[in-house]
Image (cartoon, rainbow, N blue to C red):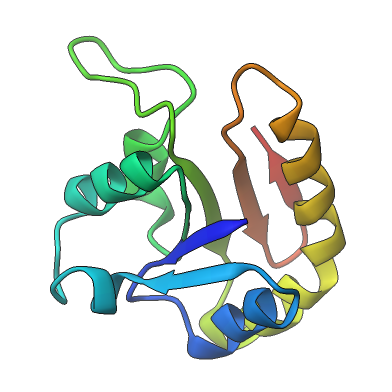
Length: 127
């Protein structure tokens, strides 16, 4: 998996993905700190990457399976949104990593290859 790590993601969470052999790119290294979410989404879309973020509210709208009226759908962009406390993030990433990887493999066999996942303190949701 190619993952674009948003600037609000704890480094410990990025390390969980890297330890599993996934390609990690940091928004702060690819773009300027404070880059607006639509620009991050466009970058991820072009790279066919999955944005890992704690900014669920904004990225849910930007990286949706169905576009809002008048908005372009980003067909190359996936999203893994963490909706738990940042200190809990590493633990939750470790707990759900097998499921993330399984759903990624399933998505690669579909016409729509985007992976849209929400990780909370107690749930794992695939959209």
